[in-house]
Amino acid sequence: MDAVEFEKIKRQGDRAIKRWIDNQLDGTSVTVVFVGARTCSSRWVKYEIEQSKKKQNGLLGIDISKISDLNGDTAERCGEIPEGYPFYLWNKDNGYNNMGDWIEKAARDAGR
Image (cartoon, rainbow, N blue to C red; front, side, top):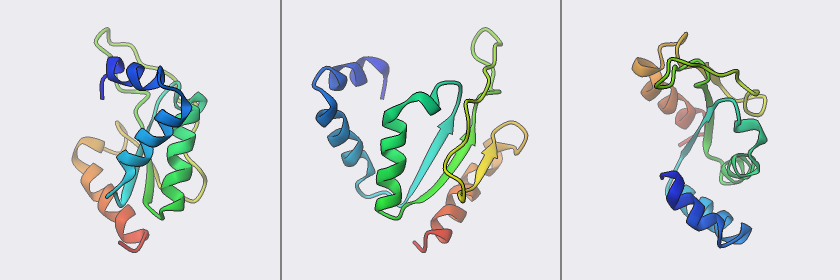
Protein backbone atom coordinates (compact mmCIF):
# COMPACT_ATOMS: atom_id res chain seq x y z
CA MET A 1 0.00 0.00 0.00
CA ASP A 2 1.33 3.41 -0.81
CA ALA A 3 1.52 6.31 1.64
CA VAL A 4 -1.45 8.16 0.13
CA GLU A 5 -3.79 5.21 0.67
CA PHE A 6 -2.57 4.70 4.23
CA GLU A 7 -3.10 8.39 4.97
CA LYS A 8 -6.74 8.00 3.92
CA ILE A 9 -7.15 5.18 6.44
CA LYS A 10 -5.31 7.12 9.15
CA ARG A 11 -7.73 10.02 8.80
CA GLN A 12 -10.54 7.64 9.73
CA GLY A 13 -8.98 7.00 13.15
CA ASP A 14 -7.36 4.26 15.17
CA ARG A 15 -10.25 1.81 14.86
CA ALA A 16 -10.08 2.04 11.08
CA ILE A 17 -6.34 1.34 11.12
CA LYS A 18 -6.80 -1.66 13.41
CA ARG A 19 -9.61 -2.95 11.20
CA TRP A 20 -7.41 -2.56 8.11
CA ILE A 21 -4.51 -4.41 9.78
CA ASP A 22 -6.83 -7.18 10.98
CA ASN A 23 -8.23 -7.53 7.46
CA GLN A 24 -4.71 -7.69 6.02
CA LEU A 25 -3.88 -10.54 8.42
CA ASP A 26 -6.95 -12.58 7.43
CA GLY A 27 -5.90 -15.69 5.54
CA THR A 28 -2.22 -15.33 6.41
CA SER A 29 -0.03 -17.86 8.17
CA VAL A 30 3.22 -15.87 8.39
CA THR A 31 3.94 -12.23 9.21
CA VAL A 32 7.18 -10.71 7.94
CA VAL A 33 8.30 -7.54 9.72
CA PHE A 34 10.76 -5.45 7.72
CA VAL A 35 12.79 -3.57 10.31
CA GLY A 36 14.31 -0.23 9.43
CA ALA A 37 15.04 3.06 11.13
CA ARG A 38 11.47 3.82 12.28
CA THR A 39 9.89 0.41 12.71
CA CYS A 40 10.30 0.32 16.49
CA SER A 41 8.50 3.61 16.97
CA SER A 42 5.42 2.48 15.04
CA ARG A 43 2.57 1.49 17.31
CA TRP A 44 0.91 -0.06 14.27
CA VAL A 45 3.82 -2.42 13.69
CA LYS A 46 3.57 -3.38 17.37
CA TYR A 47 -0.17 -3.93 16.95
CA GLU A 48 0.39 -6.09 13.86
CA ILE A 49 2.95 -8.21 15.72
CA GLU A 50 0.56 -8.64 18.68
CA GLN A 51 -2.29 -9.65 16.39
CA SER A 52 -0.03 -12.02 14.46
CA LYS A 53 1.00 -13.73 17.67
CA LYS A 54 -2.64 -14.02 18.76
CA LYS A 55 -3.57 -15.78 15.54
CA GLN A 56 -0.44 -17.93 15.91
CA ASN A 57 1.11 -16.79 12.67
CA GLY A 58 4.70 -17.64 12.00
CA LEU A 59 6.69 -14.47 12.60
CA LEU A 60 10.08 -13.32 11.39
CA GLY A 61 11.97 -10.09 11.12
CA ILE A 62 14.22 -8.88 8.35
CA ASP A 63 16.63 -5.98 8.81
CA ILE A 64 16.32 -3.73 5.76
CA SER A 65 18.21 -0.78 7.24
CA LYS A 66 21.35 -1.37 5.20
CA ILE A 67 19.59 -1.46 1.84
CA SER A 68 20.60 1.71 0.01
CA ASP A 69 17.89 4.16 -0.98
CA LEU A 70 17.85 5.98 -4.33
CA ASN A 71 20.54 8.35 -3.03
CA GLY A 72 22.77 5.50 -1.87
CA ASP A 73 22.04 6.26 1.81
CA THR A 74 21.36 3.64 4.46
CA ALA A 75 19.83 3.90 7.93
CA GLU A 76 20.45 2.46 11.35
CA ARG A 77 18.14 -0.28 12.53
CA CYS A 78 16.00 0.68 15.51
CA GLY A 79 15.79 -2.81 16.98
CA GLU A 80 14.46 -6.25 16.19
CA ILE A 81 11.20 -8.12 16.70
CA PRO A 82 10.18 -9.90 19.91
CA GLU A 83 12.69 -12.38 21.23
CA GLY A 84 12.20 -15.98 20.24
CA TYR A 85 11.48 -15.30 16.59
CA PRO A 86 13.98 -15.52 13.74
CA PHE A 87 15.65 -12.31 12.64
CA TYR A 88 17.64 -11.98 9.42
CA LEU A 89 19.87 -9.36 7.87
CA TRP A 90 18.74 -8.76 4.29
CA ASN A 91 22.17 -7.93 2.89
CA LYS A 92 24.39 -10.21 4.99
CA ASP A 93 22.02 -13.20 4.92
CA ASN A 94 21.29 -12.89 1.17
CA GLY A 95 17.63 -12.04 1.58
CA TYR A 96 16.97 -11.81 -2.13
CA ASN A 97 17.68 -15.53 -2.52
CA ASN A 98 16.63 -16.76 0.92
CA MET A 99 13.45 -14.93 1.89
CA GLY A 100 11.16 -17.65 0.54
CA ASP A 101 12.96 -20.26 2.63
CA TRP A 102 12.74 -18.02 5.72
CA ILE A 103 8.99 -17.69 5.26
CA GLU A 104 8.53 -21.42 4.74
CA LYS A 105 10.55 -22.13 7.90
CA ALA A 106 8.44 -19.65 9.92
CA ALA A 107 5.28 -21.39 8.64
CA ARG A 108 6.66 -24.81 9.64
CA ASP A 109 7.72 -23.50 13.06
CA ALA A 110 4.20 -22.18 13.61
CA GLY A 111 2.82 -25.59 12.71
CA ARG A 112 1.12 -24.51 9.49
